[in-house]
Amino acid sequence: VRPPWTEPMASYAHQIIIEPKMAFGTGRHETTRSCLAVIRNRFQPGSRFLDLGCGSGILSILAAQMGASYIKAIDYDLTAVDNCRENFAVNDITVPNDILFGSIEKTSGDAPYGFVCSNIIKTTILDMLPRLKSLTRAGGLLVMSGLLAQDEADISSALAGLGLTTFTLMRDGDW
Image (cartoon, rainbow, N blue to C red; front, top):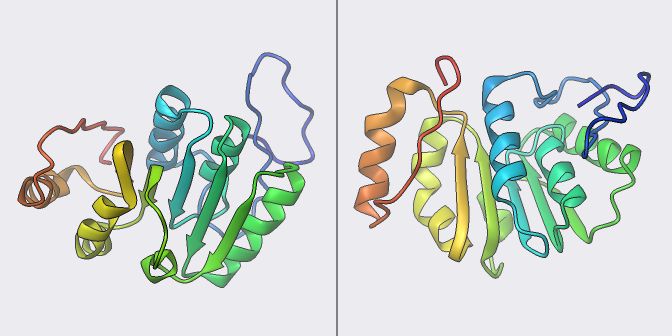
């Protein structure tokens, strides 16, 4: 991840140019780093990608570079939506996509996604967890980030309540 004024680094398979602005997602925060690692390790080319709480668009850009067939990026912050669009342009993202202002309601009528990434706070994730589950196709991957280590019991209980008992926890600092 680099700003547009630095030179490309030849040793990296994927390079994401992020115009640093007020939107979340420069690649330095623990939750963003964790999401990027999961995408790099688990994303399957040809999958549809949902980025809920897209911020700068950094996660969607990596998914596009890894062969996403479609991307829907959503944020309730207009600054983030504008920055995401700008970063898609800077990174020459041509994958079919929708970058939308709003929240989970912008997924109404959507077919399930192969990869769902929600990098938002616990209270919001808990409220939309049943919908996030339904938006993740069978065999797909649901990544929830933006969660503190202290949120583990609440999130684990909510997942179990939906019949989701197989999951992996990744920690980075307090996140």
